[in-house]
Length: 228
Image (cartoon, rainbow, N blue to C red; front, top):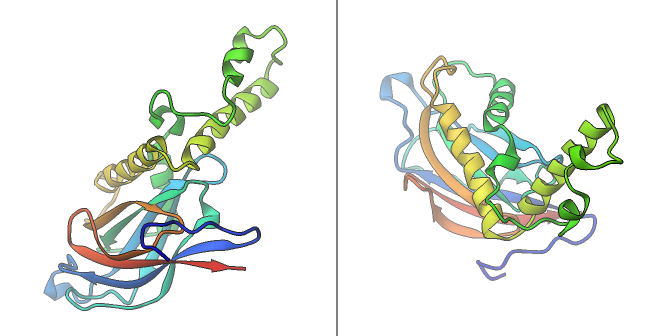
């Protein structure tokens, strides 16, 4: 497979992104504290059109300058509707409940609709213009039905953008990653969980060999694997 050609899933398949190899220049852990405890925060758009965050521990990655070849299933693409995800690496200091962390990071992202760049394509061109806002429609239902329809329409717009291979999709997922990093740096985290590196907009079905992170501290090889 060409390194820059994404793989197309067949019906019934699930695509994983497998972490074949990883190496750190700096594990961000001081000698007296012992081995590093690295974890990955994966962010994108979920199948419900809402922010999605998963956290994976990397217990084999305990020190710098020691390549590891875990062949670990890092990204399960069935969790995501977006064609892209971000992968942020951190070193844990102290106790951390990863379930609480994931929920907190999802909440920090906020409304995805506000992150979509103006003019991004919708999967239903002209629909909103023809119908108009629900508040202006003479046949719009009142109360809960109207709220449900508005939420559904907003989620559909997000999903239409996120699932594409477009600048709008890249922008949306990158902004989600920025929100995650901002939240990880806030004071709600009792201890200092050190930032290690980031891999923005990793694409579904794409192969990455010796990819350097944004901070040039981590190098990874990521391979798409289809199951089913």
